[in-house]
Image (cartoon, rainbow, N blue to C red):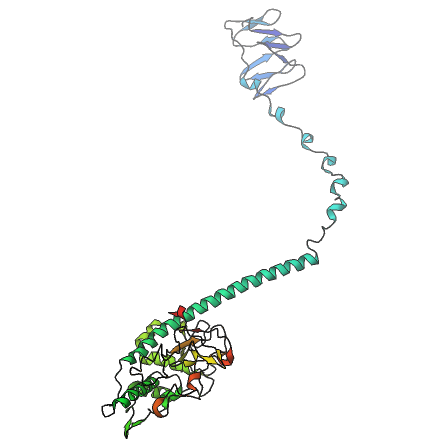
Length: 422
């Protein structure tokens, strides 16, 4: 064994291994399965044993020599402690349970920590006073009224636009039919009449033909053709026009008997649907309505305006002429019918046999936003229908009232007699 590497101190029981010291004393180290016996203790390392007490160490066949227990033998070996000798035991890293246990006082909060200040328990003052709430409600009510007013105005504008569109379509259909009478051949023989009688006779027969084929009241359908007598010659339309016969069969059943029923609105729909059936493709279902008050079985449809109410029709409406007056006050509202027999004479009177006649244009109208016809247009009621000798319309004061305003009110309806409709 090399002296430079290892020394054995028996007196103080110290092992000097390199620069390290082991204090054996009364302590014991358990390293792996080996044990070191210091003093009277024995350490069994593998198959080797070390006797400390007697100062002998058996290493192979070597013998200890010298006072300090120096070893010599046939073979010298350096002593190497096992690796486990330098490994701290597990207990060195284990903390005692008391080190992990907190004292009870550490978990106990002082009473002051749980006590809230009085200000924290006091409820905040009310968010709004009564005056503030009332002001807020007033503002909301005003804003709601403005919004509702705007919505109502928008709906009214949309309804008026829809009404104008429907009336414009009806006007195109009616005016095409109406202007066709300018070249219409009258179904009577006027060859035996004098020229001075033939011209008015043709005019009156043509007006009677319009009355039967473009009716605006039930009597226009049911009344027989007028009879004209000139120099012993009798002239009338015989037989009735085929279209008038179709109308008669239509109104013979289920005709509303209530005098307040919108008869001219029903007849307008009948004129278009039966006289020009192909034109009905222009109208949507929303433009057609029924009035359950007078027609519970929905037998008589009418053209509906933007408010769902009837659109009315007057074949002749002299009372709406621009120069029409009532009680000395001008109340005409037409932009296209002047009522002037000189500047705007009746185009159907090509020979000017009726000097009082002026250009009449069929009137198609809606009451507009209002709902009462009594504040609207005078339809003539039962006081006038085209009949009598000669068919002299313009000499009849009742006829001249048709189309005038009722009760001298300002009419806010929508008609085809306004320029913006053309």
